[in-house]
Length: 506
Image (cartoon, rainbow, N blue to C red; front, side, top):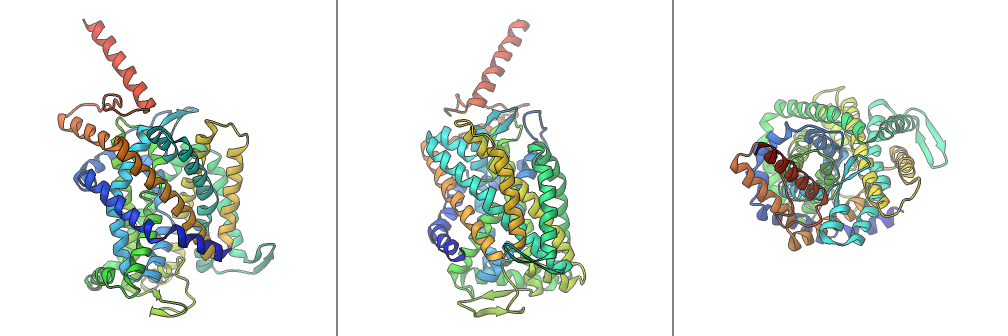
């Protein structure tokens, strides 16, 4: 199984996908005139404004749900893997992916808002919806929906729970070993998997509102706590910071593991962590209640900064400043070996050891708790994403019990990931991420060259902002955007209401 997964990843994560991720980010940065820089102040303003409704969640809640998907095990274990296999220079390429990816995130999330629908009293949207409506290719939407249900419902949850299980075992000990039908498993991992699945079941049976309410409290709190701990470690070793930054920049172009390894691992883990272009963020973006689609696009662009430039960088600096890492070379050889050879790079141990070396007795339990909350909220986001794509399929074919099967399958995958080996879990996760990224990035590029709806929305929003309007409006038909049925209907109703008010006034 591991060999097959590695073979699939070799195809999916070929240099072509790496160039596609970087190229798409650069392309959208240029086309939007670097919206991620120009509109940075507006992102902050929008982040703290906006309200929820009975149909949709607020901009901040949508940010929290999408951040719960972005801020996960990739920020702790994924950064460690990037350094462990690509060298310190991989961190630079994670930054590049984040900066360029913010423009991609704006584009895909704005598209999700433009083409969202109201289903069963709540907003739904995402790549499958905009592929059908903007591209006019329903079959492409179906392929993405099926791939996403498999990836988010079965492959990716195991990556998150695997790190929770490993961190819990490292922090509290393995306990007795138990023989099971799937192998010998530690008592600690079995208990961890059981607790995670029980809490997960309680929340996912409560719907998107319960997920949003949970994540808007947990995600900001844990992200802030994590960044504070990292800042303490950096400040205690502040004299080493210039050297570490120089090492990251130097190894990015002449890295010890070879330029290709640094770029490859940096981009792979960068895309996995911040999810820009992957197609996951747009699902939460579509659920937001906003006056204009571009507003949620800008909020989601900012979430990429939070994920990579803040949280991932915090992990990287902790690991590099304390020297708690190895760099793997070809075969069994190490290019850099600061730790024992059996310390896995595909896991949280680098980060735990980094904190433990500076704050004894803190590292293991803190990372265990941080990973629990980061990874758990990511699993919640995966459920919501998979459920949204099931809702997309149910528009055409009513398949009874499909949502229930998703819940059971996701809970089973979560438990299995918590107790099994890391390499297979990460390998399956990479397959899922890669497939979604290929489909989504190719799709949004086709949409851009055929209609440019996200760019038209940005220009419209900037024009209204410059005019100083009291309330933003969005009329897709005036902009030449077709099939944006929700917004077209809303614009028509607002125009009729305005005409009626003027008639009464006259």
